[in-house]
Length: 432
Image (tube, rainbow, N blue to C red; front, side):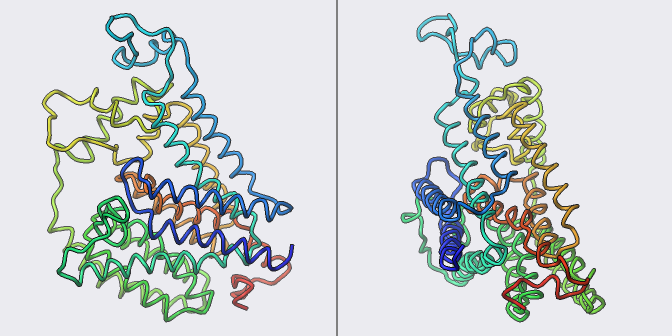
């Protein structure tokens, strides 16, 4: 493989990653900007896969791509309604227009068009992951600056928004209301920020960007406090501590880093809990209510599900009559429960296989800082997904795919072979 091919592939994926981080912050279904980003990611990823055809791709990525594709197709295949009626409420069985007779056949999905959109939305980041897995180790690590640029653009936008009193926004241009940074949802914006901390710390310690990493981390913590996302504040608090202690575990300056961690956590913790104290959660119509109602729905649809993307169509069926509010529930605010409700047994198996795969991978490459920190970023996104739906945002989905590409990378493992243990083994090729 020539260097020109490798560089071109890296820049193609880097362009797609930056574009998604800057423009992919919407949460509404069917956004034009999301469709444009999906086309861009598909084109860039396909370009890399074809250009680096001789390079091996991640088998895990290909398997998960096929599993998600097959699960989506299965939900769109017409089945006898007599078969469906045994595994779902009668209210979900379609009737002949103008009569009480049920249709002879129906699909598992309650909304085929939504399922198509949702499956495409899920497949695009996986396709990006497959393309990234074909990059050379140094080129995959070289995507980190592109990722950090996207995070910094969101930080800059947030700082400008908090410092200006005018109501100028990019709503008309992007097609969704921008709340903070380039995101429509403050919690999803916070997900991007706190999940970036481990990678920025890696960049500072092992890519000789210490001053930049320290400044960026401080800025991220301050913006998280200003954003006011409760989950973001708490997870940011935890991820700083764990990241620093993870690095201190093998670094010579472990004692100093531990002291720095304590000082940062003391100051940040005061601001975090002050911010949380000022907020309240509706105990009757909040995330606990969403989760319990979704669990009731899963019990009646555990085998087939209701179709990817059909959550808000089926959820009201399980709400009590007195649960009438001005707002409607568009997501479960728990991505795991939503996948089980929409995907049924197939969704549960795919989700379980993914969790098993990343845990196995984390154990296998846990001695290498890049993979260890990438796993930490993945873990924090998954933790936040238990109280939110960040992976339903294009920007977060692509960032998540990038973290997985780093976790499944062989970069540090290959560089460590044949060398004695020591700090140098963790340095990427371009940093030595």
